[in-house]
Length: 261
Image 1 (cartoon, helix red, strand yellow):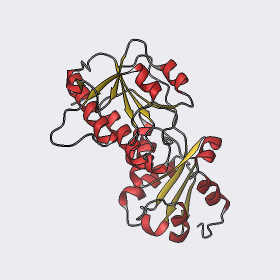
Image 2 (image 1 turned 135 degrees about the horizontal axis):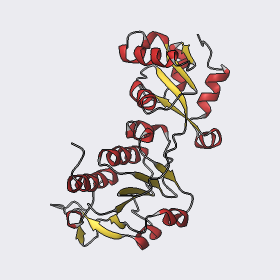
Image 3 (image 1 turned 90 degrees about the vertical axis):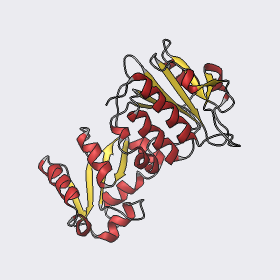
């Protein structure tokens, strides 16, 4: 039982709450039964699991998950509630957290639908877009420079496990990102000032959708490679939240492509 927040393993895990340490160690700290379970089901083996012994005792799902990981010889350390609280980023912790390698999936050999996040700073919006991209059948998500860290704790939670199933790449420069865009795919930009409605696009063909930041929209490098498309709106509404706009367009792409069910 870990009873001190100065325990070496606790201190090491806490460091992963900062991006520079995540980048250095190539590890992330994830929290919550659903997220840890998603990682485990996706074949990600935790480096270390921490759990609040008191809280997990009353959670059948968490207890079952812990049993599976223990059986696979994953290090699982019980903690007091006070110690676990220093790892938790949520208001009401579920009592389980894990240190895992940053998930790495190679980009698809052939892209049918990709999402580019350009300058999106809100981690909740970024995570929502990743979650929707996976649901819409996208096969790649690309983070342009100036976008929130893909492995921010709030981004991880909002994505609901998409990080462990959807290929994801982060880029330091737009030129590096642009070089990875498939030549065979049409590139579109969600833009309230566009002249073409998103429903007029044939999403059955290979495509890349760029969603720009909440305040300033997409930057010049994105605009230089993309055709702007818009979502028609009623009343005096000028634009939608970035996550909402991107999700609307992604699900139209899924509708045209037939969906999974």
